[in-house]
Length: 285
Image (cartoon, rainbow, N blue to C red):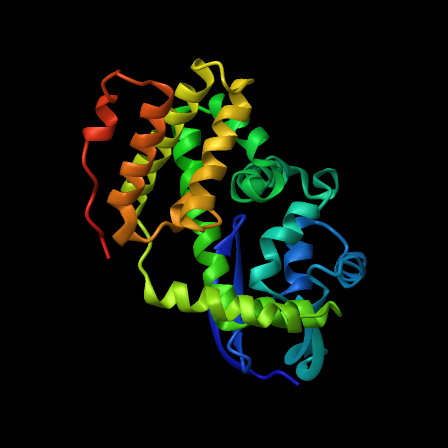
């Protein structure tokens, strides 16, 4: 049974809650308190969470002192891990919450959905479609997508090194023995090499776009989306990385030279675009 180590008050949607640090070094919040503040039934929400395998393990019972008549008593209360709070809020039917906070809940749900799109779209879409989608992004959306790709890459490394991926697969009853050797190889690369920083990643992205456009204009690869997707795949295959932001920093100049040679292949005799001569950003690490 978990025990409470310390409490930390915080304000959320105009209400003050207490985040509790438990003996497993995780933070929890009382489910019934959040439900009452939102104006929804805690019992039905507890059942919904328990039936959702994505977060059912994030709902735990913790013995706490609660008011009882003119004194207090110790009883087990349902607490939700703070890590699951955004996901759970994203599943709530906004029409059921208190009217005075409904607009805030809807805004949160919309932002949650939009953020999830940018975080996971590279995992969901095939490369050719991802390249086409990116063409219609605003500069701010492209920058956000790059940052989220960096975040996903870093999170995967953290999950891998911490053993979290293997634990989750085992919890779901999947086989992991055949993945061990791959994990070891990736771990060695992660530990041994520093990846390019965000400025360098943006440079590589611009160069890949230049080569994709040159490939398309040459008439050898159509449509445009396929050309952009193909050079992205060529780049990842050549450097044996799953995403361009995972390029080792020591190979940055090699990457620029590789993309320059591919551009010249499709634009023979023409001067390289200025972006190829813009230099590279030193590591910020």
